[in-house]
Amino acid sequence: MTLYPHWKSRFTNILESILLVLAMLTLLAFCAYLVWGKQGIWLILASFSSLLVVIPNISPNYLMHLYRAEPLDSGNFPFGALLISRLARLADLPTTPHLYHVPSLSLNAFSTGNQNNSAIAITLGMLKALNERELAAVLAHEISHIRNNDIWIISLANLISHLTSVMARVGILLLILNLPFLFGGEISWLLVTLLILSPLISKLMQLTLSRIREYGADLFAVSLTNDPQGLAQALQKIDYIEGRLWKYLFYPRKRTPGPSILLTHPPTKQRVDRLLALKK
Image 1 (cartoon, one colour):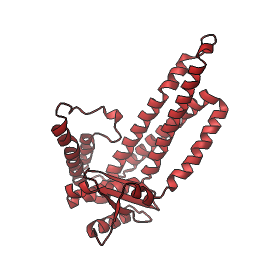
Image 2 (cartoon, one colour; image 1 turned 45 degrees about the horizontal axis):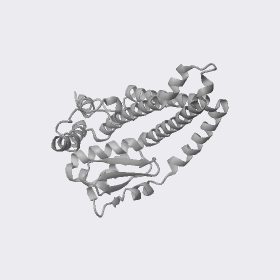
Image 3 (cartoon, rainbow, N blue to C red; image 1 turned 30 degrees about the vertical axis):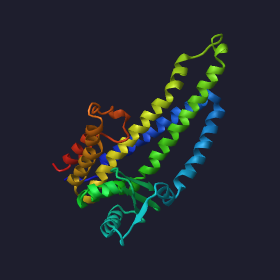
């Protein structure tokens, strides 16, 4: 079995992520320039830098409190506590993430924080649905997000996307207010069109970045567990319970999935196919 991170896969993942973030920053700078000129670029960079300092320092425990999550430890969940500790060591994390459970019947798991201070939450529905093998694979996936700084990167992209949307709205408002004067002068409608479309373009790049990091987390998780089949089974089970079964029961005529370009996660079938290919 070829385990991730193979240097080619890791390099491709990092390169694609860097290029997408740079493209999003360029689009943001372009919108700021159209609205306020060169001063707009400096203003948006200052705002962006300030928010970039604040966001990574938000306490994971505070976010867990917002979700009404409760701690899981060796006292009430010894298997999970031992598993998360072992995965953290395998991933070379300096600290072990805190494990929480969210009182929800939906099937979901997410991580927050950074390598030095992180938390992983898993819903009650997930704990009930997955067996130990599948749960280990899911936790390894979340550990991978922390290890590869995916949370920070996705937060960065989300921030850029929001700022781009704000800049575009301000620019469109200014265009509307000055519309009578624009027809009498020179205006590049190509630039106006790009300004209008910039929030959509930025959002699509953000979603693409998210899918790239999800693929990377899947593959890195396999390097921790050496069990691609376990993660594949977990993904298929989650997809069936949360997706197909739900739609079949309540929306029998609306079972066509949306375009993959609009998804934060890659389609389950593609993820499973990539995982099972590692066994060959």
